[in-house]
Amino acid sequence: MTLGIIGGSGLYHLPELEIRERRQVTTPFGPPSDALVIGSLAGAELIFLPRHGAGHTHNPSELPYRANIYALKEAGVTHLLSVNAVGSLQPHLPPLTLVIPDQIIDRTVSRERTFFEQGIVAHVGIADPFCPELSDAIAAAASSSGYPAVTGGTYICIEGPQFSTKAESRLYRSWDASVIGMTVMPEARLAREAGLCYASLSMVTDFDVWHEEEEPVTVEIVQQRLHANTTAAKEIITALARHGLPERSCDCGDALANAIITDPAYITDEQRTRLAAIAGRYLGAAE
Image (cartoon, rainbow, N blue to C red; front, side, top):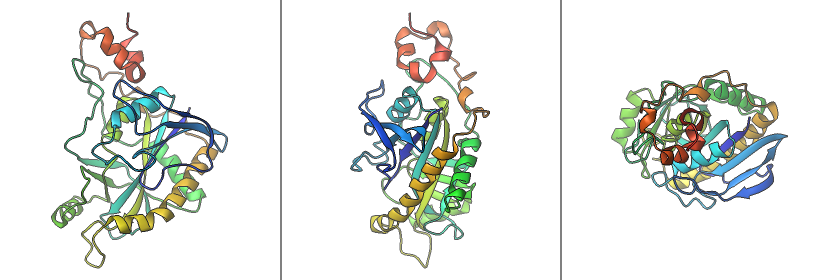
C-alpha cells in the first residue's frame, strides 16, 4: 500500500520526505499539476503532489484533476490524503481548527468530473465520498501529534476562484455545512472512480464572510494563518506514515465492480488503453 499526498495552499513540499525521484509524467488526460515527488517518510512509501504547482500557478478551476488522480493511481497510490485550506461556516470551528469532513456538497460548475466519457459510461456510488477508515487513521495521527481534529461535517466545494458573497455564505450555513473550499471536487469523484481510499485534512484559515465580528476573508488573512496550519499538516502526515495505513476492508477499491454500464462489445481498444490505469482490471487489456 502506498500513501499519496495532494498538498493544498501553503503545502508545496514535505521537508522530511527522503526523495528518491522527481518524476515528470504525462497521462491520457494531460500532465498533472507538477512532478510526482516519490520517496519515503518515517519508513513508509509516499508520493507527494503539490495541487497548485510548486509556485501556486494553477487556480482551482484550472487544475488538471483527472491527470492528478490518474498519475497518482498509475504510480501505485492506494490511499490519498488531500490537504485543503478552508473557511469555517460555524462558530465552533474557528481559524486554525483542523477538520476531517465526512460529506461534500458540490457547487462547482465547470470541471471535468469523470474518467468515463466518449463512448464509455460508468456510474460509481459516492454516497460517502471520504473513506471512513483513512479518515479515522488521519484523526488518530492528528491526535498523537498534538493537533486534535474535529471529525465529521460537510465540506461545501465552490467553483472559485473568487470567495463567496455574504448571501451565499448565509445560504451554506443554513444547510448546516461546516467548511467551505474550492478543491475536494471533483477530486473525490475521480478518486472513487480510480478505486482510491480518499480523505481530506481541512485546515481552517478564516470565517468566510458571514461572521459579523470578523473581517471578510482575504488572501492576506489566509496567508497569515497558513504557516501554522501547514506545520500541523506536516506533523500529522509524518505520524500517519509512521503509524501505517489501514487495511483495505472498505469498499473504495471495488467502486468500479458493477459501475461500468457500457456493453463490452462497444468498448474500443483505444478506450481500454486510455483507461488502463483506472479500470484495467474491469475492461481487460487492449488486443
